[in-house]
Image 1 (tube, rainbow, N blue to C red):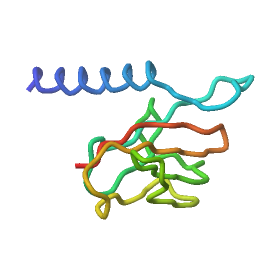
Image 2: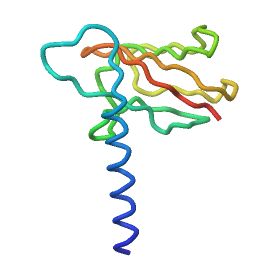
Image 3: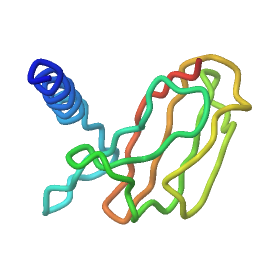
Length: 112
């Protein structure tokens, strides 16, 4: 039981460290530090949530989400929601542009 809890804590800490190390905010640097976003789950073949990298809870300040194909075409676009569905997309690695009130972020998303 304790080993299982330790493994879960370790995996969660590793995800947070990875999110902080790869915090790709696009644009100018704001005066205040801003939280980063992560896409959960990643890889995915169904629903994806834009989450805060620290708390792993859905972001409530998402203005728009744009999923961009490997060829640079927008294949999915949503406004005002931190959730989107990629089940209709073919398997590939996509870029996801997320606009929040804190800035614009770019993340990779693997669709299986």
